[in-house]
Image 1: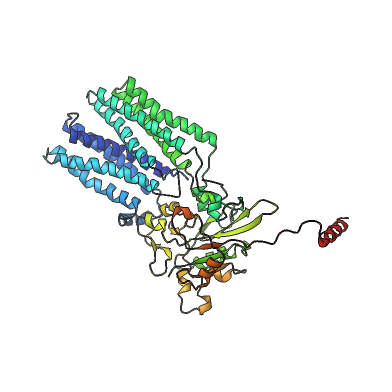
Image 2: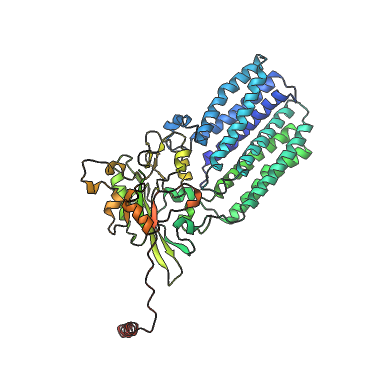
Length: 304
Length: 227
């Protein structure tokens, strides 16, 4: 699948934002750390800025954005519509949460709880846009929503740890929890790669209706690239994919893990967060570049 | 009604006339225009609703060239409709035709990703998704003589490899063809229940083996011509 840069920015940046908001509101609900009002407000604003950058980026991949407002209408059937509805719904709830922080309302637990649930729900729903597509086996898998949720948790968590350390809060316990989460996510991502080493089950015979016969393409029927080729036939050299995988594993997991284990202070954690975001961009790029749509069978690929 | 096409892979010669006729009709039809970018340039691109792929089936020398026109299958369980966030994609309950309301589409590409047949293409001009309408603006047109109330691709096909009709009516031409010629759906395992059916090539007569009188004569003639 063709990786659209706006979608990569959207899922990575907004993912970290929802993760950070999730940590902030979870802390409110469960009361792990006592934070001052300005600290909480600054963290909340940073989270909402990350989310908003992501959402603005996401509209950039629409070819006809003037109809984007209509995407709130089909939430009963479409995951993309559900995402749009929940993403917009978060803004008034987050504003109420901010007001509750500032005016120290007693209902703060309610608004924080809603923010936490909505953040988790939005990341899950975003992942389901991909995971619901039976045409792409690398996406139609339970590991996809699991990993999206974990990536939001660890990237938002790293930002959370950085902001706490910056405010002089003791984060040694948090660093340990995050280290475990990063390691667990790395294992699942490795598991994801291993899952898709085995070839898929849909083949060119099924795509053309000629079971038990050798089928090969003679002519794809067009002499110049088309929408279908650009979108579904995206191919990069295997060596580049392998290189990207190594860079992704290093930046997303290895560097943050070392930082969390050995030098978790404000400056290094900020550095680790930036490196992890770059790693996640590579991860999202791979998520698209390695996805194989069944239309490829009709262009001559034997199996997807 | 369940309108759709039966496509005869035995007789299709791969002339692309159906694709051209489709483009010609629909570019000025209800979902038109079908924009082309750089149509006379080095790298032309554009939205087509029907594309013809050519496959070799079997192992040479006993293989067969099969031309396979691919357009929307008007699936019974159309995933492209389910995923659409704006409600632009819809399936008509009265005849099963899957259509896109151009005034509602936001061009997010998700329906094209959900379609296993590559039947949907984004129009580079309007930024909206385009797909086969089964010539909905022809088949119900009372101004046309009844014989012409058919999709443009069906009318134009020089070998009559495309047959249009109602799959819900067991006595329609398409239903009969599907029964008699063992029409195949494409990628049925995805569960979208495509309506269009593909009629496999008939069994061809065995290739003449060497040793027949005619074969010997041909060989001699060939040798003479070669000299």
